[in-house]
Length: 340
Image (cartoon, rainbow, N blue to C red; front, side, top):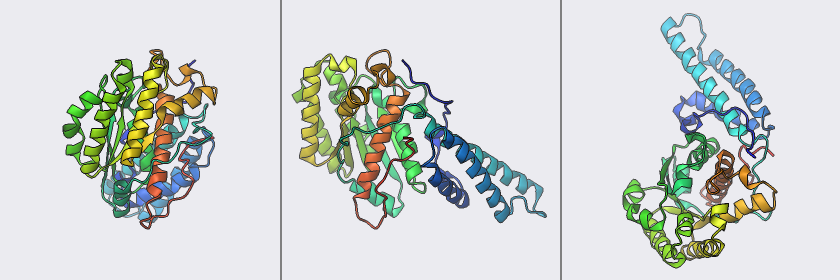
């Protein structure tokens, strides 16, 4: 069974509110607030009405349609406003559509805290650009998704930009299909550390299970890598293997990898997103068929799977940033754009 979704758009992964002039950014940010509580497929309709009204008012106050202005300037301003309206309509629709039929829910017992993310928090407070590197294999590159928009790094980037609309947030997708800890360690300096990221999200362990690598040796490399990333001044979040038929065929090794990765996270006081348990909860507790979030190869996620994974991870990042008391008022509820 494949989950039905509404029409999808593909520009969202490149959308940044900060790219608009300041008045447009403010209008866009204000417009998005009431949309958080809207029903899924009503999101696009309400957002379209709100954004049309907001930009109409802005046009009057800023003199877009003011008589006496130069015709060329008027045309240019109107064209820019129209493009902004079209983009805002699209982001509202794209953000809500993926969960319009099946909501993305966390496990009933919760996921647990990622801990604090001090480097990311300080950058957000100071207004400096935030750089996040997503290190991993094919589930980081997004194999199985229908378009780049639905890879987890792009979905995560869109969520964080909605929540922090004035921030300059970049997420670099450093996934390479088929790799695990040995290959990732060989390129750690070049593809991760040389970018001086504020946060590294490291998805690791799945291919180690599939290739029957020694879990202890794999996790020893991860331990070394986490230490190097921390020494370079970056926050770290580990992501353990996915719960899917190809992985659970090797249940013993999968279980050992998951356990050992959690120990590394505890040892270094870094976050870990328990993807294995979250996906198992989708199937065993929320009664979602495996083929509703895993594609036919029995390994990789589909659009809904990547989107829900990104949504839950993003919620945790937002919550964790809020734990750093640097003068920012972060609301306790961070169910950003998740229709229930």
